[in-house]
Length: 117
Image (cartoon, rainbow, N blue to C red; front, side, top):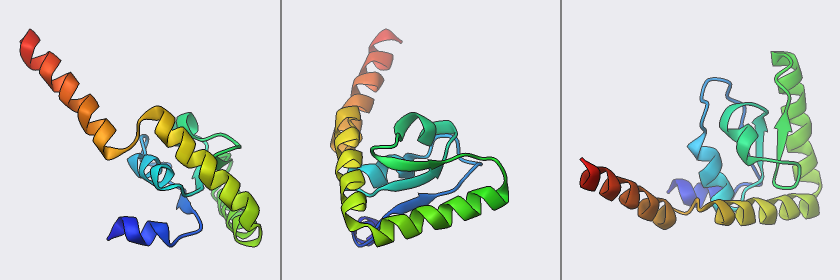
């Protein structure tokens, strides 16, 4: 159900400074949503100017202001949003973020751990 909700969205906004990894960012990219996130932790490693929008964590006011600008920009410029969406999906595919690919990777890790133990 969440995937269906994501598919109807223009973007995924992830303003967290508390969650370092942000697996939800990977999931949003896999679906092809432009991600708007704070420039730190996991999102910082995944997103660049072609596949999302990163906001510097200068202050709460700055983050709120820049989130609003980013959302307005994506809402007002469907071509830009679609370009970012395509780039996000491509990046997710490059990094192997689909659940089947992640599952295969985890199984290989578990098999190595079991066979070496």
